[in-house]
Length: 78
Image (cartoon, rainbow, N blue to C red; front, side, top):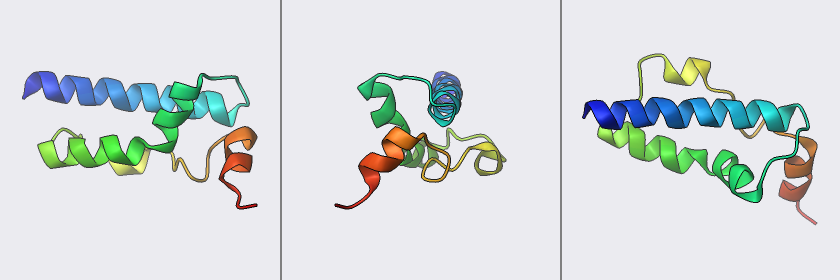
């Protein structure tokens, strides 16, 4: 369980770093964009395992609102 918690903390840190990069219009890989867009899947699994720290949701950026224009544009319907 301690290793799972540590991995969860690292994933959250990576998500925050990527979300900041996207928000600041920095170029990220398609895999990084996928992780930001689909982080809710990771969150769900961490939550089920008890791996999320208390206060997590207050600190995590809202990925649907705080993403870069390139991803926002790709999410718009035609």
